[in-house]
Length: 410
Image (cartoon, rainbow, N blue to C red; front, side, top):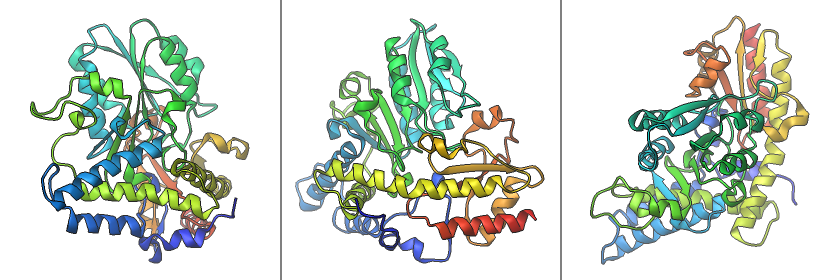
């Protein structure tokens, strides 16, 4: 395996040529030039609806198919028929929750977690209200910063119908043992819905190995356009009643995709998967496209996690700073490089504004990890200061934010 080609990687992203340090990646990443080019080309040559008898429509059809197939490669799915594409992960989750709810009756139970983004909490709570279901809350372990099987087991019973959990936290960065939690939930007969929005930019999601029934993610978090992606088992997608027009296609994935697809964004989505294939090639991988994608993930993780640990180590040295998440270098494999802090005397929003004025892009607030902020006893409005790395960031950018924070906190 070759060393990580950071300068070559950065040259692929036009935004990185400017003065800003993009450390806001948990909220949205930058896109490579091929993604920009693919979107532009589709808007020129395939700005048509699907199913026509002319070239522009045929090209739009091909883009639609390729986007689904590319995401199947990305997620380890069996085919593009298992991939739903839509406006956003939250919207797709709300949409599919209505179909799932029709399977259940009053008194049935669902489990949501205290760690998840609202996009994987509110849809299930609202559905439970509509169907008369009981909602059970799964805590996370404050020592390990993860959801542990020992905490899930007591909540499972013969009425449990669904476990909704995240793969990685968008606030603490913790990676949950999804495969183990899934096996436990499935042994009780429950379906498992995984929010992979924060994990997919950093950890390859092999849905077959995880054993879950659904996995949702957002392409703008892994260097693509603003789209939501939902993988689901084909048998389930075929059985669920679709909330769709009566004349919609009866087969998945189209039976759950509403309206005219955003063809230009689908072209950008496929190009974002191609970027991972390209990166795998740059680090010396050959073989199939999924093999090159896997190599890209391995190389990116090996590069970005030491930089993330450097950030954590320096933040912990600053008086008054609390890092909310795993800090032990020996536990790196259990987190992604999303680092959230609070300071005893400084509001997170004020720090984010001050850093933004210096061209350092970060986020503040609860970041829609509403229950997690509550559990940590944080100010629900001010939340945390969140610094999130991607594999196109550099040690120099991390040192820049460290130096700026030291100055601001002095």
